[in-house]
Length: 340
Image (tube, rainbow, N blue to C red; front, side, top):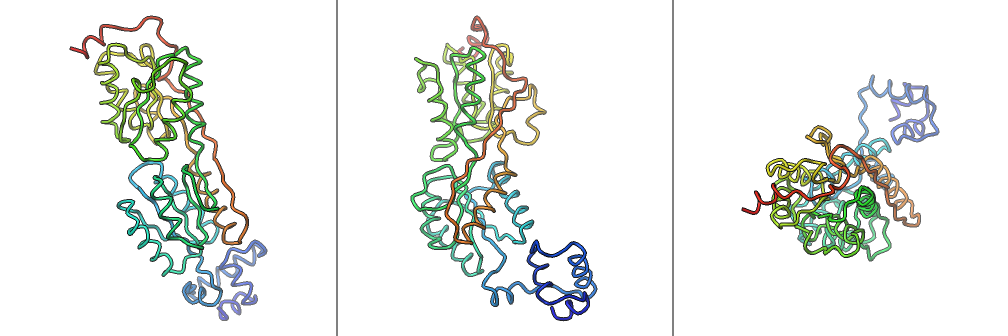
């Protein structure tokens, strides 16, 4: 570092500030230091610096599932935001919610000397076991579930997203609104289902019009076929995510239903490519970029011993061609075809 400082004509403290992205360094000085580092092929030794400063400039990110678009989008946003703040990310994806696996992963983070941990917790088991294993380590949870400890949390406002979708459907005159939920035990799935029930028109039986899915398009298809075979099909279906909405749309097509003339369909997430389906589904967009920024900001506050906050990121309803006014008369021809 001394050689870099001499080559750039600055102090070692200034070089250190450049390495840590300190805002007090001017653009010209920052560029001079970077050119000197490149000329001398200098690479900072983070392990050595951690021993001196007590900070590794590394955070651990624990995710209970990386196969779904929600956690994957959050993970990308967290990593990009962390790098912009001068931190590197050590990521671990859980194969299960087994408490021992959670404990082993967090023990590995401790051994790496991470400055803090962000946990994307899809289930209450993941929330509870993460908090227990993290102890006093600065920790932020991306979760909609209850947190017993006084820890910072951040998530998209799932209930508000459903409320926006249901307000749209009811405003279009729909009174028979079915719901395809995500898997049991998933926090987002349960919160979305509870919000759907709370928004139902008076007198609608939530048990009849609710089918369990698993986030896959196939489960959305099967749920929709069950609804259509009931003899009194819904006029609108709210799917717990976009993939299940794709399955619902396929079921409508196979059974001769026109969307949205006969049945309106709404998804959740606004995943990439959802606007290219036929018809493109109305959906609830989750701002994963804002989620990552908020999670990293909360972790920095936790590292600085600031009081914990709980942040809800507002979702946005994206209205597309899959929703329309409720039909005045139910179609019976396609219903009979399914029931046979």
